[in-house]
Image (cartoon, rainbow, N blue to C red; front, side):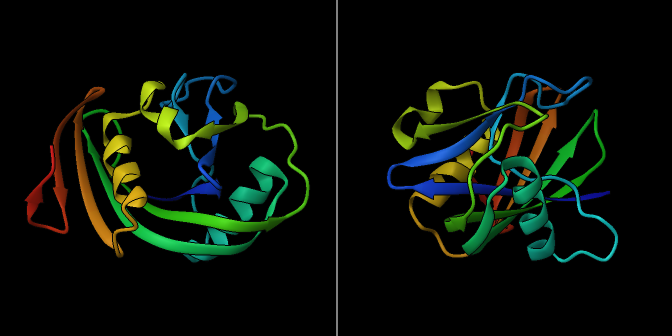
Length: 156
């Protein structure tokens, strides 16, 4: 079982996105995602999102919100609990990332990019400013076969 974070830095009508094109054997290869990564021993979700955002972007978050918990179940990968954040404040200057290319993308254009199907669901939830949520996403290969919101509502 894996614990990870994912953060969408928000600047007006844009998110800072990472096009995952540089890492070998990357399950997210060629996908656009937010920034984040796996927990280190003893880290809280907040510790992890602060460290991972700094490592991948060079930015230090100063204003961020814990928005939801996404449970990924896959027939190819271990179960992952992803702690989802958005951020509207930071300091520092962005630097290049060794996992891919960082780019500010207009929210209205996100769904036209190569994204995981489940990411489209939680991006919509973020866009509607939904209160803290739990989303379970089940994949068979790259096909999303189940999406359950807050334990009851199938949102596929």
